[in-house]
Image (cartoon, rainbow over all chains, first blue to last red; front, side, top):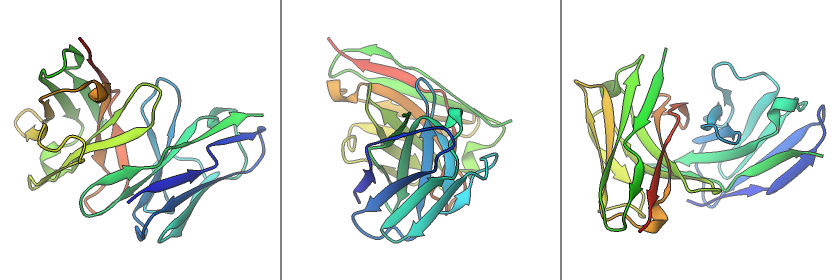
Length: 106
Length: 119
């Protein structure tokens, strides 16, 4: 299963709303997660199973979708949210990550 | 507190072997699904391997037949044995825990260990 993320780069200002897309080449049901990664750091789980926020993740992060089309929404960007975001699916044999979306400061 | 600490990375010549370790604390690896993920310099994340709580293992096509994942419950540690290393295996290798057996999310990650394959 191939994951495609768009856009590759999203340039926004603090306080703006961010919508990141992840599309799967075939249905993954709701087995999709989202991660945030900052330079020099390990990835951090934000959303699992398409729409469940991980422990300690602020409410401004939300996930939606099922099947092949998924969206990560950040309702109002905080300065610490500028980072790279990856989606990831799980199937019966393993995992696949998308290429990432970089959210940078406009 | 859950913690994962990888070790064993370093500089290795093409064709060589290396064993990575991932020491867990705050939970038991024997009852969890454990994963290795790698990230080449400046690139995205790539899944490498998974070991189920029952011992079943799966691998990415890029490493199948060369890498072996295993675990030692007495040491609460997961390993990745890497043989026939290639330049394209150069990456930071992370171990991570699957949130629960039926989940998609990897909830805890180590800090990573760098493997450089070069002559």
